[in-house]
Each structure stands twice: as structure tokens, then as C-alpha cells.
Amino acid sequence: MKESELIENLNAISIKTKHWTYLQTIGVSQKETVMAEVLKYFFQPNQKHGLKDIFIKALLETQPYRLNKKEPINPLIFDQSNFEDAKVRTEATTDHKKRLDILVTSKQADTTIGIEFKINHSLNNPLELYTKRILDEKNKTNFFIILTPYWKEPEHEYKNSPFVQIILSDFIKNVEIIVKKEKYFENKNNTYQYYIYNDFINTIKNRGLEVELVKAYSKLLNNIESSVEQKRNDSFKIQNLYSKNEVTENGLNKESKLALTKVKTMFESKVNNLFKVLKNNQFEKVNATSSRLDSAILKKLENGNQLKIRLTLGGWFIEFWESNEGEKTEPKVNYIGNYFKSQTKIIEEAIKFEKIIQRETN
Image (cartoon, rainbow, N blue to C red; front, side):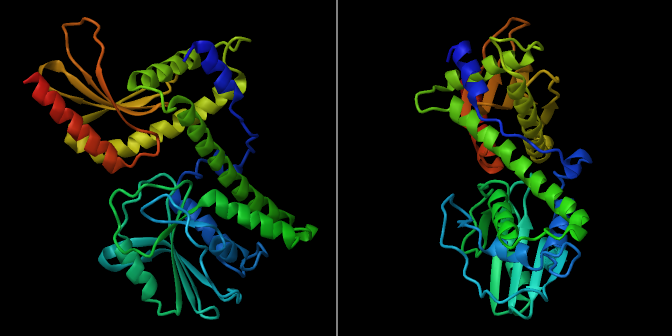
């Protein structure tokens, strides 16, 4: 894709207004345990927010997806009786000292809701232990929910698990609809609680916008006709555009630069999570400069050769860099998948690629 086309497309990607939020400013919006505590507050019907059981009902009314396949399924069926006696616990202990993020129980509704909250981490939890913990409450109706910013490919297939995935932003939209319809917060005496509620809602919306940005960039660079080389080259063209400090009429606008910076932060977090899994397998973290959009980890091979796993706007790539006494060489490259690829699949592809390289170089 020509540089002018890339600039036009990048600047055309809709950048919706992001709201300043206190939760993001103090750096807790990416911390699952902290955000789970905030959710606990809103799930408790008798808390000072005055929203009763709105958050519980909004969650159960949100479109669920299959656990192992990105496919919508029939809505959850639940009795519309109220949950105003609901008890909410975080970090509910299971067998083998594992913990379920949120457990909601209601004797009045005869219902238990187990929620595993996934903001940044991969989906590799012991769901069979969580299932048992939920069923141990001995209620008639049980719900098993993975609450996540986007549908996540599990790190392994869960067989016969009752869990479903629910998208966090879809859930929050439902909350907003009900709050508006029921005219909550019209009482000016509850202004402080409204600000707490609104800050949380906007924090989740901001996260949703960042995910949509990644999807838009991925779609731009991963059309059907794109070869591995084109995907990678276009990613580096955008990298060069991003690295230019000046904003000109013929370059990226300020909104695009800001959006790309947000995506860069998401890339770094994603690669850091992969590194935690691979660091004991001779991989090292590549510290990217502030002007770089990609993020990578590398493995040093024999004879000074290197294997790199790199995440760019075009997706995940694995590269073999052959040492050639200081001479500039082009790597052998294989495309692994887009930003949303599971860690397990990335590692499988890396191992496969390394074996091919070993056969070719021996």
C-alpha cells in the first residue's frame, strides 16, 4: 500500500472522543483485582449507588458467546424475580486454592452467578474448579460467565464447560440503557454516586474504543490479498510515519498519532504477557523505544542467529535473523495471526517455525 493511501486510511479511521476518567488516571483500570472490586460494589443491590440489582440483571440480559468458538448463542434464561438480597464476594476460594474473581448468590432468586473477569490476561483458568465452586452453593439456577473486553480464544479447548463469554462493553451498554430508562440519578441528592458510576462507565467505554482501534488497524493491513511481506512492510511504513514528530498536512493527524500511542501501550502489555510464559525458554525482552509501535521478544540461537516474535499493527510475526558478520540481511518471516491470537497458538507456531529453521540451517 502506498504511503499516501496508508495516511488517508489511518486518518479516516473513526476516533471517537475519549472521556477523562479517574480510574484510568490513577492507573488501576488495567488491574483485574481492583476492577473486580469496583464491579462488586455495583453488583451489590443495597450499596449507596442506589441502582438496586440493575447490574446483575443487565449482565444476565447481555448477549453471550460460546466459550470455545466466537459465535453468539441464545440469551441466558433467568427468572425476573429481583436479586435485592444478593451477596457478592470477590476472590472466592475454590479447591486447590484457586480463586474465582466474583461470586454472586441470591437465595430470593435461588441463583448463583460465577464471573471470571479477564481484562488483560489469557483465558487459561481452571474452569472445572470454578464450575464446582458455583455448584457448591446449591442454588437451583447457575450462571458461568467469562467477562472480557473482547472474545478471547482459550489457550486450550474446554470440553463440556458450562461457561460462556460476555463482552464487557456490551454489558455496560445494557446497564446504561436500563439506568436511562428507569431515570436513575435524576435525584440531585445522589450526585456523588453518579460521578462514581459515570467514571466507571466511561473507563469501560474507553477500553472498548481501544479494542475497536486494534480491529480497525488489523482490518486495514490484513485484507485477503495481502501477502506476509505486504502485511509486514505496511506495518513498518506506518511505524515510520508514527516516528516522525511533526504533524503535517500530508502526514498523520494528531488524533491518529494519539490513537496509535494507545495501541502501542496495548501491544507492550500483550507481548509482556507472552514473555512471562516464554522467559524460561531462553527468550529475552526487546525494549522498544518510545518512537516504535511494535513490541518483540527474541531468542538467541547458535552462531549469533536470532529468533524474534514481533507484534505489529499487521499482527504477530516470527522472524529468523541470520548473523552475517555485521552485514545487513533480511529475515525469513512467517505470519502467525492478528492481535487477538491466543498465546498457545503463537507459541505453537514459533516452535514449528524454529524446527523448520533448524532443519534448513543444519
